[in-house]
Image (cartoon, rainbow, N blue to C red; front, side, top):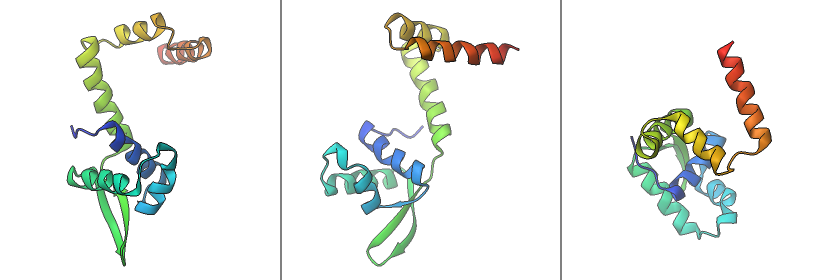
Length: 121
């Protein structure tokens, strides 16, 4: 699995959401992070080097970037890795940890229970 840093994930989220984006669009979307433009361009270049992002087209000095990895596939692999690393592969242990630490609201717990019940039917 490609290792993507937390900052790089923020860039990936923009590209995943937009399906394709220029560096200026990515910079605009990430303005609340208070990163300078060069930092974001560096993150994009790292993602290109990791083959997580590709260049779809170039018009003058403007590049349009596209994801080379699918969001749902990346999330699934990262979740599996996290489960193995922290919870011995146990989804049950992870969920109990969230419940015990009050990370899930009552509404979230209710929704989760409904989804589980629907799966069991």
